[in-house]
Length: 110
Image 1 (spheres, one colour):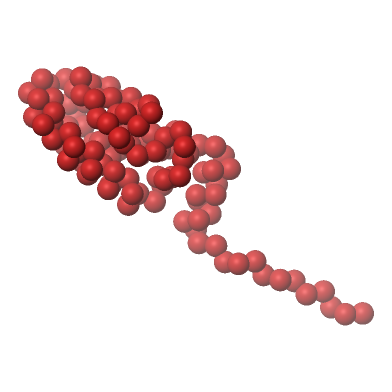
Image 2 (cartoon, rainbow, N blue to C red; image 1 turned 30 degrees about the vertical axis):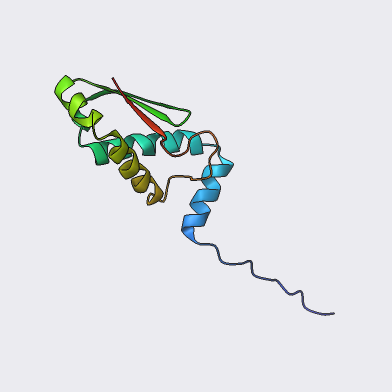
């Protein structure tokens, strides 16, 4: 009788295991939304003045408590979008290929 040979599977990094887990549990959309809000706080510097955050269809809606901050950020919208998307692309928890919640296309300040 011949011994049974067990084949090893290809080694998978922890990074890939976490991404597979996120996909299998179907929590990518919610996690991506939270990562987008974190990107806003990190890139805008206006996290403490932010009252509400909402994301849908590539549009990030931000309600600010200060009209002065809102008017200053209004003229930096394109730069902020670029900065936040760069921040997200470097975030290992952000799932880039998620069809429901992806990169920021538009920033709407209220």
